[in-house]
Length: 369
Figure 1 (spheres, helix red, strand yellow):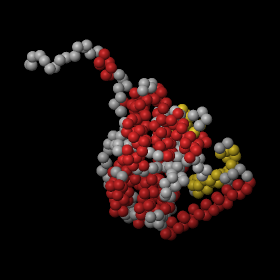
Figure 2 (cartoon, helix red, strand yellow; figure 1 turned 30 degrees about the horizontal axis):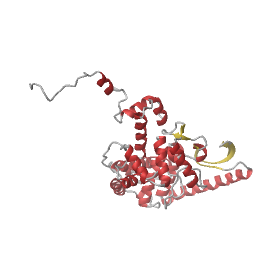
Figure 3 (cartoon, helix red, strand yellow; figure 1 turned 90 degrees about the vertical axis):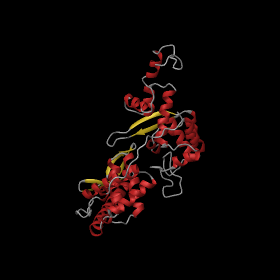
Figure 4 (tube, helix red, strand yellow; figure 1 turned 135 degrees about the vertical axis):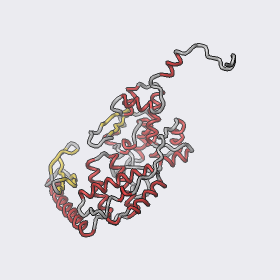
């Protein structure tokens, strides 16, 4: 039966579907009796649909579409937004490659090998291995909780049978100030606003994609609220940061020219594809294309965060201030972060120079020994 619960400051009806003692689906409705009736109808219809899918799975076998939907619903409820987005991308690519009607008992290691080889060639060995990890985790969860899943020894987890791809790890590229502003110079419209926000807020990608006009952007008092949620099960942390004039003008332009009535997200896809009109969850290759157009070494949004941290330090900001801008829990994290860029936080060079002899040794003259 629907429950009457608080949501966004008022009582609303919440439809809940429980199967086997576990909540599998929820949906919010309005506060009226009519909404309560709608919630009851939704619960009954959803239960029937789930039961139909269960019976079909037992008779026909589980499809990739069912694998995708059931597992990702579980991930969305129990894990962080960042983890969900990563798994969503892996499943989207695999389903797109083989089709949603493929039965999971038809997945063979040879197919997984072909898929991983393609991802390695088009993206990287690191990216291919991430997909392998996420798809394998989905398989292991599903064999426990999805009825009709192939359990016999003839169908082991095909994602673990195939070996990992070779990884070539490299240091994350931190752009120079000139490089960043060159990329900014070739950007247009919303992309330009995103770059401005990433730089002046030292923002992570997920923090920007989650921004809403109502809750997070205060144009009147010129401030922005970022939501940081890096660990599943840990309460999200909210931080208000001031807008510099350049960022204020950029977000004001976004409000006047790009804002949509379809939803409240600040940044959303305008691409002519199936994602148009929806909030960003992941954007592939847009930064590399801008870097190519600006003729600078390719860097990502996290590289911009690193650049901002370095700029704050070289401009003389205190460690405690930089910690607040980066939204680190402890100053030691910020110290490690800055030292990883080769910055001399301990003033070792200054101390060494101050204690050196006033006269420099002359190595160009004198008796050789």
